[in-house]
Image (cartoon, rainbow, N blue to C red; front, top):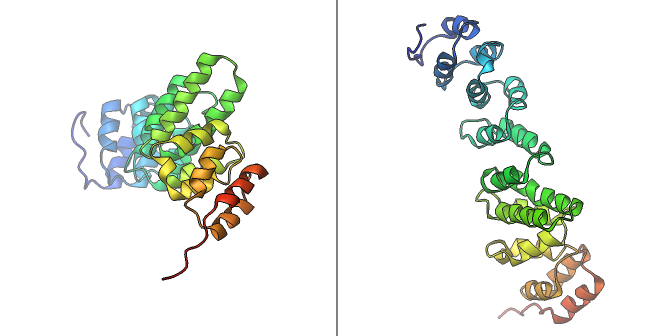
Length: 256
């Protein structure tokens, strides 16, 4: 196949295998090949064995992102990618869901080693799972530093993660209920303009150990006494706050 020629979507895999295996395959031709969304898995596997083609970062990204690349090819390839390339793969609409999860896991495993600037970008733009992991990673980081400037930057990461449009209510609830979630995270969620008004998140915050008395009393007002008693049974709030909550709780309204 000539350099620069388009790859027809109907070309049989037997015709493309020699191209994928060609040691002289250029970056441009490999990328043209990978633009074919219907490319068979055997061609993609052959391309993954082409050492010359895989010298290209763009080819690695395109191969890891192709919808038909087998998982046993795409995931090892993803481990070779840079942080923001991983984010690009995880957010691609054509990448299979199980591969996205695996790529997110790779990203999350790297969070302790990336810079604050990289964490800030990930907090704003990465998947909801990565944003949720960053909420807890910020907490861990803040316990390790005493420099006020660094702590302020970490707090920016946490706030950016809470603004991530891919962050879901379920992920926020899971984060605040983790044993590793500290007061800073609980307070940030409890004061957040979006999350603090969600009923299920308020209930989750009432089960944490760090919610302030003022917020606990505010959130507890909307919960009938039987439900509040049940919720507080599994809460880590201090006993004094639990007692105050129950004293001000509202009874269930009788039916009309």
